[in-house]
Every structure is written in structure tokens, then in C-alpha cells.
Image (tube, rainbow, N blue to C red; front, side, top):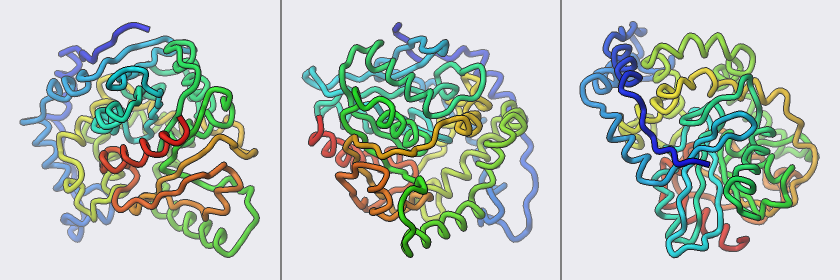
Length: 365
């Protein structure tokens, strides 16, 4: 474990800037001006390119990441980068926060100061192959990632027991932690959940499966490509910052509680910074690999007994299963309906997120 503040070489930033400045934005159907009905809006993307080229400042974003101590540790041959923020007053309860795709540790920057003042040591790693971490040599899934997180928390940082929270891939990794490492995981909190198929079929569960099927028909093309041919889309996007931004930001708009106006939730600077976390480390491709890596993971075929909290956000694109179905899979001790927010819960609504997560783990620390 060594200190590892973010310091991206200027040559890397210059290369990305050249690609952005040279980007030509393609055309759009004449009925899609500002509508996003066919995907990312070309006019909006052109405005993002102009802002990125003329006004965006990575060094300011980098300074914000570096407001918190960050470190690197080699785990299973992968250099894992993580923020480690100590509780105000010391002796904090360790809380591990895991992001997903197309997110990054940026999602949690605003909640760290809120949680450390509640008495938590907050640990926020970049997933393997994401952000500021190194990448595995081939796709891995949440199960192996969870084992790496155990090593990070127990062997590297020296904690004996900890809590874990996550959405998107963070939800899967957190569930795998609770399933496989319950001897060191005190409780978990999730803000995305899917059914395992173990619950008895009820009319409510049938309606849920129909809703998910409709959702995946409308929103799931990206996941099918990531899962089946990750290198094809990865190589296509890796050298096109604007192309990758379009691939990612369309999801930021569709999956957040923004009512169609992505900039009502996320500034252009924030959206670019999230995209940059993939670009500066060369992790556009590797960040897609986990969809393929998931195929080799064992199923969630037994009940998780670790106390589990769940926050239901109104604009989360993946609907939660009925509560009785979730209770088959999880020791579900808390279910909170949140007033606002979507898939990027901590990023969209940091204060309510910190209040919910902090109060949950106060009961189980």
C-alpha cells in the first residue's frame, strides 16, 4: 500500500484534447432535435465537444479527487487504486463504497465528507479495469472482485469487519461479499437489485419479470454488446473520447432523475470528468469487460444472511423485485423509499444518500 495521488501525465491529457478538438459530430434525423429519441442528441453532443475543447479543466477535477488521501495496492496482480478517508475524530467504522458502469469514484466524492462526520472510515476503490485502478489480464466478474475487496479491507487496511454499499456492479460485488465473505462483512446496503429466480412465482413477480423484459428490450442493447462482444465496442470507443462520451452520457440521462434534462442533475464538467476517469487510464475497454466476466461467476443460489438494507430510488431504471421475492434472497431488514434520485444515487442526491446509508449502518456497526 503506497500513497497514490492522481497525477495524469500532461502528454495523456494533450492526446485526449487533440481527439476532442478534431471530433466531427455526425448528423441526426430531422425529428430528433433535442429529443434524444434515437439515442444521444447530436446537437447536445456538439455543445459538449465545444465545452470540453474550450473550457474543461482536468487539473481542477484532479485536485478534487486529491482532496482525500488515495493509495494503491497490488491485489491478485492488479494495481487497485482507492480513496481512504478517515472518520472525524478517529476510530471510524469502515464502510466500503463500490461504483458501477458507467460510473466511477466521482459518484462518491460529495458523500465522503458527510459520512466521515458520521464516524465512518470511507474506502472507495476504482473497480479492476476502471478509473485509476490497473486492469486484469482478461475479464473478471463480481465474485473475484469481491475476493479482492476482502483482501483490500482485511489484509491491506487491517480491518477485521466492515460494511459495504453499492449500486449497479457495486450491488453485485457487495452481494458477492455478503455471500462469500460473511465472516468479515457486518452488513450491506444496496440501491439496485434484481431477482435471482428462487422466489415462488406470484402475480406481482410475474408483473415484475414482464416489466424487466420490456425494459431490457428498450434499454438493454448496450449490455448485450458488452456481454457478448466487449472488444468490438471497446476498441471502437477507446480512441474516440466524444464517441465514448456519447455512449456513456446517454445512460446518465436515461437512468437519472433528470426528467430528460441531463444538465439539471450533472454539469458538463461533471459528465466529462466521469468520462475522463476511463480515458486517462486507458480503461474504456476494460471497464466493459466485467459484463463478459460475469458469465463465469457462480449464481446467487443461496440466501444471504448478512443484514441488508435497500434504498428504492424513484428513477432507478432497473425496478426492484417485490419485497417478498427479495426476502427469499436476502436478510432484508430495511427498505427505504427515497424521495428523489435514480441509478447514480450518491452522485445525484449526496445528502439523502449519506443520511440513508449512515443511519442504516449505525444500526449494524
